[in-house]
Length: 350
Image 1 (cartoon, rainbow, N blue to C red):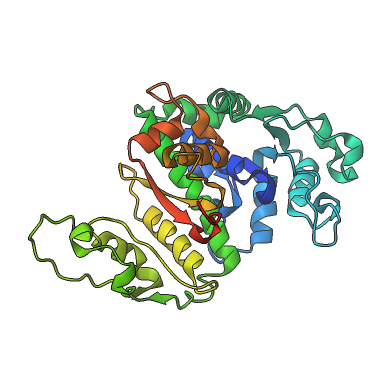
Image 2 (cartoon, rainbow, N blue to C red):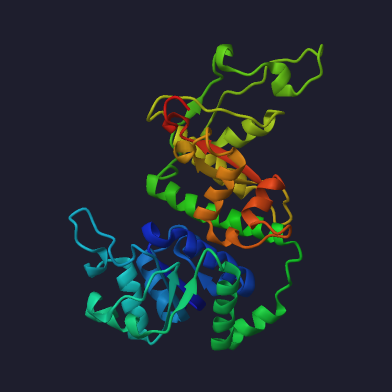
C-alpha cells in the first residue's frame, strides 16, 4: 500500500523547474517519504503505471503545477496533449478527482486558472479549485504559503514541519536545493536518452593534441622552474569525474564532432558529481549552462551566469544574505561549478 502526503503533478516541458523547486522545499519540510515526484520517487524496475496511479489515490493532496504551456502543449500531430485520455497529466488529475483527493492548482508567474470550457470533462473540476501562486519574484513567500496550507490540511505533515530542524545557512540551503533540482532534471534527461539502459553507452576519450592544450605549468599551477609530468587523461564514461578531479586546475575542455558523445559525457559528469555530494558538502554545485544565449561583448560571464540561474531555478531570485539574489550570492561564493555547453553555438565574431 502506498502512503504519500503530497503528489506533485506537472508537465515537464511546461513547468519542470517549478516542480523540482516544490519537491525540494516540501521534501525538506516534510520528509522525502511524504512527497512524490515521479523522477525521484519511483523505484528502479517498478511498474510506473501502477506506481503513479497508486500514489495519486493514496495522496492527501495533489499539487497541479500549471505553467504557460500547460494547456496548449501539443503532440506531433498538433493535438493538445490535455485532450488525449492517455496524457499522464490528465490521467493523474482524473484519478485524483475520482478518488476524492484534494487538488490544489499551483500557477506559475502570471498564468491564469484554465476555464472549465477549455478542459476535458473528467478534469473540468480543476477550474473550480482554489489555487496558489509560485512566482520568480516572490518564491519564498509563495512556498511558505503552500507549506502552511499543506500543514493545515494534514496533521502528520504539521508534526513533521514542527520537528524539522531549521537551516541556519541560507546559501547552504540554496545550494542543497539547487543540487537536488539539477539532479532531478538531468536524471530524467539521461533516462530519456537511455544512456544507462540497458548498459552504459561506450563513450571514450583521449588527450587532445598539445597544440590545443594548456601548458602543464598552468594545469598543475606550478611555480616557475618546476618540472611536471603529463597527466593520464584517457578514460571512459564512468571515469569522467575521476579524470576531472585528477586535474589540479579543475579545468577540462571536451572536444569532438557532432554526435561523438559530448552531451552524454556532460550529463554523466554532472550526475556523478551530484551522486558523490554529501549532506554537509560545501563544494560547488555543477550546473549546465548553454552558451548559445551569451554575448560576451555585452554581458559579463558573472551577470550571464546569474541571470541563467534565476531563469532556470526561480527560487534563486529570492534575496540572499548580502542583499543580492541567492543566485548572485552563490556565484560570488564559488558555490557554482559552471559546466559550459555549446561553445560552437556562440555567434561568429564574438
